Length: 179
Figure 1 (cartoon, helix red, strand yellow):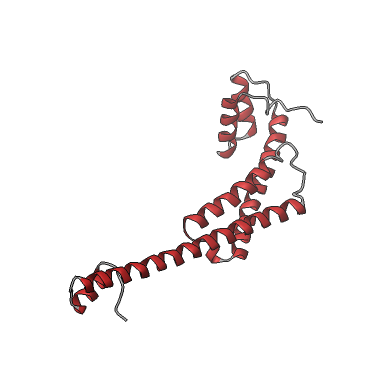
Figure 2: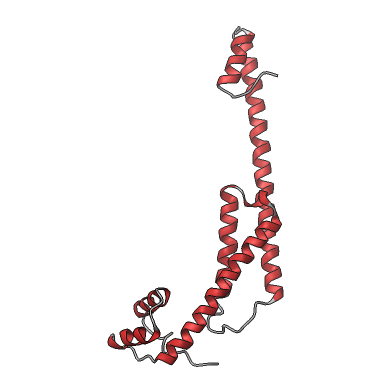
């Protein structure tokens, strides 16, 4: 097993500064000088190797985001609607990103096909379950609305309301057109 680099052993505050500087495109020489001035024992070559690893992980994260989008496209538009769909997309993105980030220590490791297949299957099953729940909720609401209309009609007739008044109640309060 390889030894942990000096960069990875930096305190979290310094690593945050390092990442901010890398994101801002600051040259490695300036980053090295800055970290050295703060007491860190780092070299330009060590920073260069670390930056290459970070760049590989960033590229893989972009790939994982694209992979998530492709999977969502294959599952269909219905799977990606509403709050459940947004949560599903976020879950897929998080899972694939986490998978990629775990490989930061070994950036040359390729994603296993079986892992990808298992991830896709889990997300697809989750999307199907979400869709089934959504369909059930819609049917349940329709059933409740139908029963409510029947109770209102029955109660209104018993109270002696006219057909026009009953229809107005159904239309304006319950949102049901006469038909």
